[in-house]
Each structure stands twice: as structure tokens, then as C-alpha cells.
Amino acid sequence: MKIQTNFNRVETKYLITLNQQKKILDCIKEQIKPDEFGKSTICNIYYDTPDFLLIRRSMESPIYKEKLRLRSYGTENRKTPVFLEIKKKYDSVVYKRRVITTQSGAKCFLNKTSTQNTQISNEIKYFIERYKNLREAVFISYEREAFYGKDDSDFRITFDRNILWRDWDVSLSSGVYGNPILNRGEVLMEVKCSGAMPLWFTKILSENEIYKTSFSKYAKAYQSIMRRNSGGQKYA
Image 1: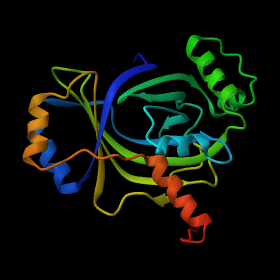
Image 2: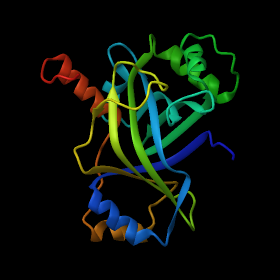
Image 3: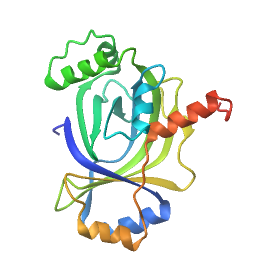
């Protein structure tokens, strides 16, 4: 299986219910196939400065924003591919570039001792050099069900449930647990395509009164951290 390391696409998000998810899947089952990961647990570490500069800038909704994260599909072990990736968004288009590494390899990037020497790894090194004192800020995990279009493999649709965050024990190998981001019964749907969304799909969204929303998992976690730190809410 060839692992993709470079993505350019438009991503649109929708906050829906489990019932709406079922209706959508029933409507589009003839046009889609499960992707190579199918149902999976995705684990992420988001890097940020001690004062959360990256997510604060992102929440200001600038025309350009960027983030750095480490991702694994499932709890990390020696057999699990781990991806260190830069995700940039400019004028609604998302650009994602990543390298395959390990958790210790990611620490080498942060410590500026990595020996990887490719175009993408050098972009990551430049990112780390530009933002001083980056650290493992937040762990975010979720259960994902992913599909792609039968006639257009660039069209992808994902459904994320059980989105959890924690800012302690920030490791890909410590298991999936933390504080929930979504309310019970909510699902985050993301539609990803290289160009315009297919008309047959926009018609389904309209018929089911499903509208796009602005939603960032990391921003939601950051807002919860700020509430906790200000004494507005307590977590275990």
C-alpha cells in the first residue's frame, strides 16, 4: 500500500446527529466505498507554544493558518506507522504534508536533531525553527468511519465520533481516554474534495437540511482547557 504524504483539498465540516448520518449513508451507499482504513481510531498530538500561540492565531480565522501534529491510526506501537505533519489552510484550501516517523523520531524533530533530509522534513524543521519552544500540547482521539467516491477517489467523506481530548499523559501509546468534545449523539462529518463538491451530494445535504459549520477539534479542546484553568469547569 502506497502511503500518501501530500494532500491539497477543500474540507467542509458539518455537525450532525447519528440519525442524520444514517440517512446520508442510506442516500449515498451506491456512490461510495469504505476507504482503506474503513473504521479506525485516530490519535493525534498537537504541538503548540506554552502560550498556545498556534491555536489562538487559528481561532482568529485568518486567511492563512497552520498547525503541526503527530498522528497514528490506533494506539501507537512499534508496528504502527506514525506521521508528523504540517497542516496549512489558505483561502479555504487545506494543504497537508507529512513524513513517516516514530514518537521518538518526532522528539528529534523538536530537539532539532532529526537526520531526515527530504523536502517535507525540511519544511517541518523550518516550521519548528520559526515557532520557538514547541511542545506536546494536547492529545485528541476519535473513532472515524471513512468513505470515498466510486467514480471520484478525490471525494472523501468521514464521520468522527467519541472525540476525546487530554492535556496530560500526552502520548500516542497511552491509550484512548480523555474528556469528550461532542455531546451525546453528535457526529462530526467532513467532506473532502479536490474541487467543487458533487452536485448529487449537495442535493442530499439540502434535502436533509444539513448546513456547514466551523469546527476545530483542537480549538474546542483549547477552549475547555481555558475554562478549566480559569476555574470555570473541573476535570478529573
